[in-house]
Amino acid sequence: MESKVEVKEVKEVELGGEVSGFLVISSLPSKALLEKSLPKFFENVKIGLEVIRLLQGYFYNRLGVLARNFYNEILPRYTIKTVFGYILPPEFLNEFTREVEALKKEYEEYERDLVDFLLNGKIPDGCSDRAKFYPEYLEVVKRYLQTEKIEVPEIASRVRVDIIPFVISRRIVEAIAGEELQRQTERLISETKREIFEAIQREIEEQLKSILQRLKEYQTKRINHFTIKALKKDLDRIISIAYQYNINSERVKILKDIKKEVDEIAEKKITVEASGRLGALLANISEGSQ
Image (cartoon, rainbow, N blue to C red; front, side, top):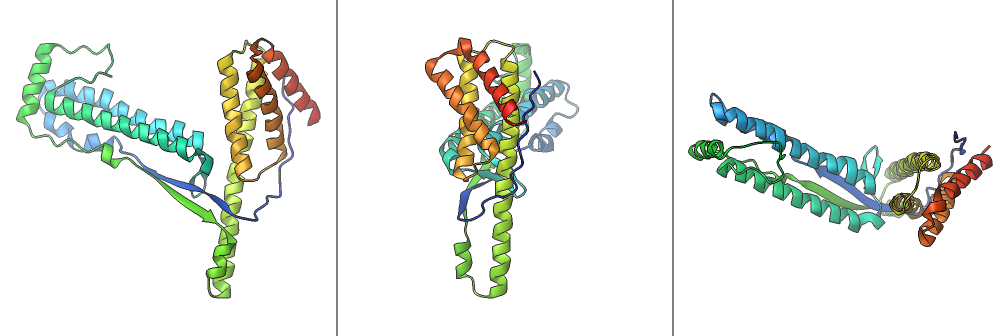
């Protein structure tokens, strides 16, 4: 069944009042830290090729995985991407902060493993089981590593995720002397507010498309409690963002209708009937938008 949902674009955005939130600025350690200094210690050393392979395998990849976890999972889950950075709605501050703290601990563990490997030749516990390292080989590696002075690059201290609170309000303009400066500031405030609202609306649009696609898929496969829980979590998130920024477009109304149905399914635990009910809801949405 093809969804025919089409929703009129919201052309007017209410820009009055204050807009607040947090600007997220981040900087994470890159693989260049390992590439810069470590390989030179193993030039013309036969066993060093294996050591470098482990660095380029487990340690290089792990550093990339940690960064992707932040940029591809954590940031999109809690923030809205705008042209001037990532905006964190106030409601998600505590959850976002907890996730960032957990990520920092992973970087600390990574650095401990790196130090333990470079100084003692210890293979990390998280290294693939398929990698075979014989005791004799490790002893040779340890002896070599101990004869060379290796400065292990700092990793954990380079993890920076700054959360800067902001409030955009025309009241600020009242304290500014000079009409021309006031006009410029008012224009900048209006443009910034509009960009934030447009970014939120883009996020709402993307989430609605994703949720409608999932509804179509649910008509042809069995739905369990975890499926409904995940759908409910995504709906709660995007509707909460819309509520915080006073956006009540047609798209948001559709999301609220879906949420109402999903909440009832989740509360009554009627997952057996869920696919039929959600399919009927999708059909009603399609008919109503024609």
